[in-house]
Image 1 (tube, one colour):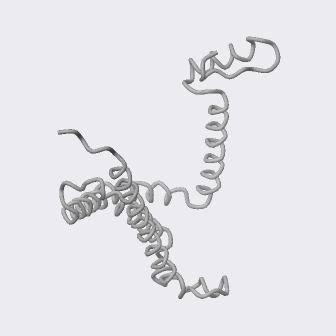
Image 2 (cartoon, rainbow, N blue to C red):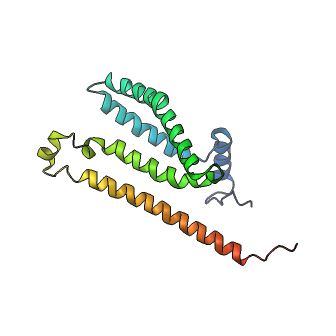
Image 3 (spheres, rainbow, N blue to C red):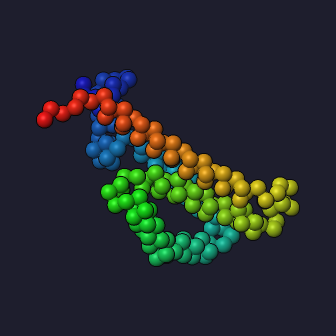
Length: 173
C-alpha cells in the first residue's frame, strides 16, 4: 500500500473504489467536497440574510473595494515594499518578510477596527457601556508586539544560522 492510500473499513474495495472515483472526478477526497458544499451553503445563507434589507449596497461595496484595492492599494504596497527593500539593502531581500508580515497584520487590524481606533463611533459607548478610548493604545501595543516578535524571530534565526556555520568544518583550500 502506498503512503497516500488509506485502509477502508467494511467490505474490501467498495469504499476505496468510490473514494478513488470521487478523487479522479473531483480532484480531492469526498470529505473535501462535503466541506466545500457546506461552506457554500453557509455563505449562501449569509448572503440571503445580508441582502434581504439592502441588496444594492453590498455589490456596490464589493466593486468599490475591488477598485480601491487594485487601483490604489496595490501601488502603495509595491512602493512600500520597494522602500523597505532599498532601506535594508538590495542584497538582503529575504529580510523584507520580517517587516512585511507584521506591517500587513497591523494594517489589517487597523482596517478592521478603524472606526474604534479613530474614535468615530458616537453610539458605541451608549450601546455597549464601554469606552472607545482604549482601542488606539491597544492597536499600537499589538503593532509593537508584532514587530518585536518579528525581530525576535529574526534574531533567533540569525543565531541558529551562526551556530550552524561555526559547527561546520572549514573548507580545505
